[in-house]
Image 1: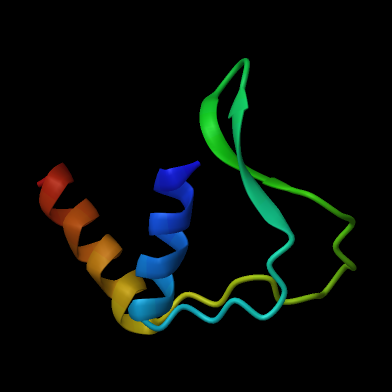
Image 2: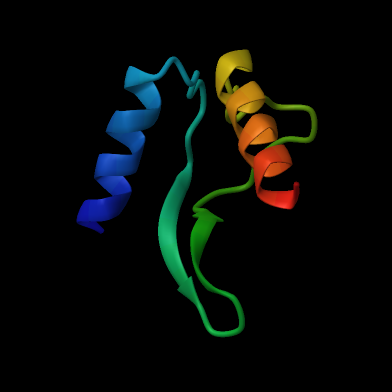
Length: 67
C-alpha cells in the first residue's frame, strides 16, 4: 500500500489531475497488481487526466523499445 501512496504523490507532482479518485491498489489473482475502483463511477466522469508530456514520453519510450 505504501507504493500506491507514493505513486499518487508522484502523479500529482507531475501534473496528473485526480478530480475524483475512488480507487485503491489491489492484487488481482489473474493479472497481479493493479488499481480497482472502490465505488461506482458514472459514465463520462473524468477520474484521471494524464499530462500530454507524460503521454509523449511513453510513446517515445515505446518507439525506442521497438526499434
